[in-house]
Length: 173
Image (cartoon, rainbow, N blue to C red; front, top):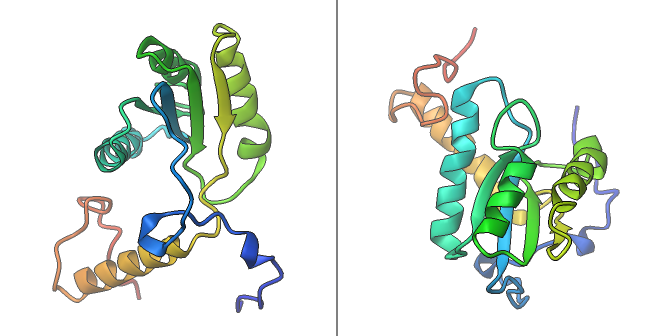
């Protein structure tokens, strides 16, 4: 099925990175804690990838308080991550869903789980950001993944860390 011509108002996309000239000031301040929350998986390797992403994010942004959380199926939970942020001195917690698009988890589950975690810390405010959504840089990420995998299938690259050992990155007939 072909993609339809844009029914969305693309002028309202959340685009603010320096890489694409976003131009917003960075409102993350000392005393902010960030939780990057994904769905969670029964597959340990998938959950460990969030930890790796959080390390990459912390190293690149230099934000001192960044914690991973899984919405369900694995630890740390949003409650555990919220507690960890507070223990490290956070006075505001920013919950960033590591989801592509807004669905039930963003509309209901993450707000509910975050509100429950915040009950123990009435002195701490929190905000839940938009999911990744439609962002120019995701076009580059998807294109990089396609290019790398096609180079692997052609025998020009090793398997990437996501596919390594799974046998999934191959040409099917």
